[in-house]
Length: 257
Image (cartoon, rainbow, N blue to C red; front, side, top):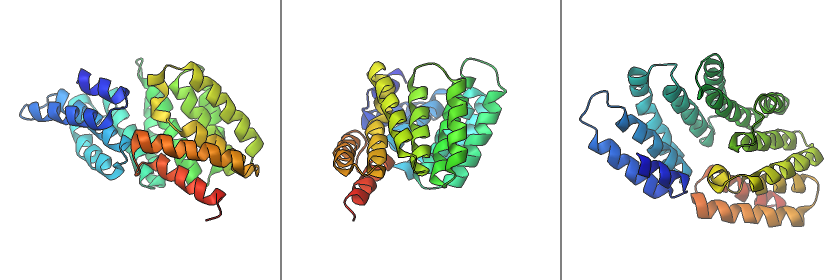
């Protein structure tokens, strides 16, 4: 488990998935064993990071009843799994399902106790904001992003993803000057974070800035950053990952394709 986790955090997703599935297979004959389902949760995350979002959702779907039985419906492990699954749904353009599930997880986590609950609530809110933006509900997404940022004042990865979510909502409202300013703040934060904290957001800052620059008519700058985002995402996640696809779509818009 430790090796699978370390590989995932290092961005070695295929190796992390293989290691996690090996752990799960080795423990598969033991009923109510905690290691096998937790390992498969890592495998699902790693599959999603490689752009195999449908495979990730299939694994999450199989794990949900197992987590509920072993850990409990409102325990941190189960809530995190639900949040991870919901955000994988978003990668399959199942935005309404993602929004509803993330909102439900955030509500449960907000009333829970323990050190993990605030982080789970914040992660779920981020997934909800992404889905709201994808559904075109940009003012709602902006309000939720600002509320979440106000509640989470630690300069960490969660602040980075929430700020990027705010940028997305502002770009969706054609408020590109504000979006660019927020993206620049996100870039400053990213530079201060350890690499393992911002590795999952590879290409995201460049993509946010490129989208704002395109909205401002600064297409040469936008194309340069969009190309950097596409190249980084292809190298880190592969051609099928949702962020790679977003970068490709932005470049197509810039080029008028």
